[in-house]
Length: 263
Image 1 (cartoon, rainbow, N blue to C red):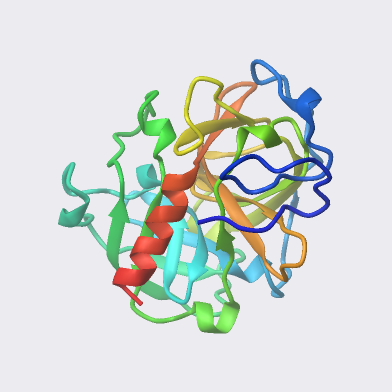
Image 2 (image 1 turned 90 degrees about the horizontal axis):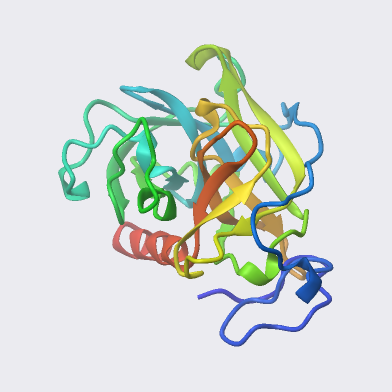
């Protein structure tokens, strides 16, 4: 399911889990979301990898953020999709399109429409409850393999042993309306997995500077001896001081299942 180690990790591996990011030790495990502030965000106009794997997701309800995790597979937050019913097999209302590396009205790698959708739990916005925040992720299947041009990120399961280590990054679309959005990048993010939720699916608290359009944006890191970054969570909700992202083993399993069923 998950292999390797986040870049720079020096601590021991947990049984049945990936080894964690730089400097994570027992002292880094803490109670409650007491997290360091990340680096100030800035806009990214770079068309290189991996920035171009992240794009604006346009739906009937507005816009959000998604990231390619396969040739035509976009990971995002479940709550940004206008589901027709509580059963994800019923699909969504209206058209959904993905624009990788969109910057204002520019679409440097074209556009693809989404023809299939999958999630583990249909969320019911505008609020995200304590169950939904643990499973607020979905995968869209595109009608063309944009990922063969842009590349894509991997997906790995977050482990609570990595709590408090500021080694993660986030990229998401902020702006005033869909054609005036830009990808905002922030690094030095520390996560804090919910102490009472299993690593298989949990909310991870953080202090990244996010806006509603950044929902679904990846929180990702680099692993030693891998040439690509991997997503460990997607942005779910924001609060006045602390925000939440969703991830865990279930996220990785959903990505793998969707890629297998829709190659």
